[in-house]
Length: 538
Ligand code: GAP
Image 1 (cartoon, protein in one colour):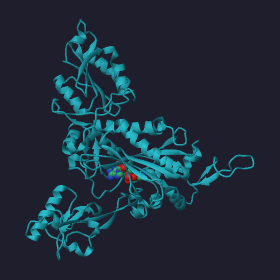
Image 2 (tube, protein in one colour):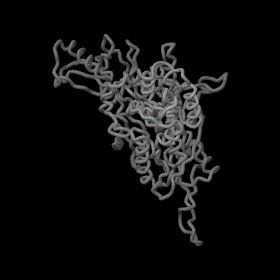
Image 3 (cartoon, helix red, strand yellow):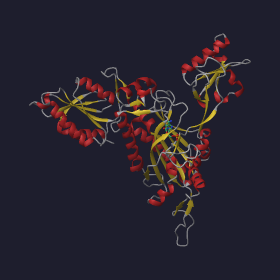
Image 4 (tube, protein in one colour):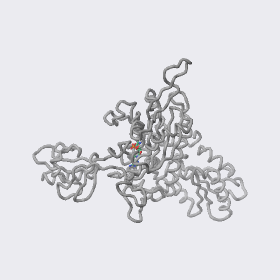
């Protein structure tokens, strides 16, 4: 991608409106509400023609760079090329997989229900507001946004029958509130106090029943909540059936399902979403170096496809955030993106975790199948001078990315307001990721122009169609067609006009319009394909 168009500096997402971005996504066919004509279904989103291609481009970029090219051709901390193989595993597995992984026993969110409004809230995501002191004070529930905080304050003032200053108010996480005072908590939309249930554990896995006559309990199975477990349960198969040697990674991409208590923020927290996960297996002694390698490599990758700048950051977890098996490990970090709805804060895009040997150990214990790796490069030296070998459960570094969150970050990053353009906004996608790679227009639909335009369209489609859409458009004024392509994020438009088809100095030349600068230049039609190839880095 070295020849690709350099990307201008990113704009702080705090200045972008999520409503405007969602409206463009609908208007241009990036993302639709699932089951929209039936009123939708909370937590589910579908991708339109442009969104489907954008998502494929991101998935393909990950597949090519991470798996096929071993982290874009990087050298690992061992001085060797990075080895990773793909896998494609089922959404439904034997439920014992989820017992071993801990998802059946522990994949729970604490939630509270409001009996009056039937709303459900994640107890660990919300707070309550109360008067800072005083006997029998009331508590007003804050639903998680500024509007609900203002409403809670109003409610408190109604109970207190006076205006309250900031230092007369205390805000407490709901999970820290004593159950005895739940009778005095007023929900965000509730009229009465005391309508909230105590927090209850809510398992996030979607249950299903396997078999036409399946019994709800005996034949119960689950939709996978992560793609990672498909990798661990085939660790031995991959070692036995391929020539991989430690250290190596196995990658899996596909749908995951979580019955999120509060799906929200567009596709950010969905109930059906896609993950791109890799489990990188190595000896425990090397885990720290590989963790560092993956942290830096994943951050650099997101930057390479256009998320560079102040909207992207890498955050190391504090010790109290770490999973129990990771406490003594090499570390855990998140690649975070400043989405307009999290700004000025950041939201998780990808987690990079040292999972130690936790998962392989669990599956070895539950399945009773030995999952140890025999490493011929380690162990005591035998009399012949060769190592005797060492048998061990490898440690694992897990870079786990969300494909839908990646698409959403790319959309938010690309969204560029520009009051000087007819469209008032353009989508500045990295050329490699852009769903439409080029558009071809006849200036007017007569005078031999459509024939030349269609011929160029055919040529570009044959050469670049496998990377994305090549549009042909002859409707409306050319200005409106440019505006449409600006909103779709098409990097280059080629227009065939009268000069192209008439004898004169510009015969057989076309106008090229650059999306980012809106500049127009002329070039020979015979050079268009090579120009595009160089600009797209293909
Ligand atoms: N195997 C580890 C694992 O699944 P995770 O942090 O729960 O870790 C990895 O998920 C990534 O999957 C997250 O960084 C996020 O990008 C994405 N993800 C998780 N839950 C999601 C949801 N409800 N909606 C959209 N993406 C989600």
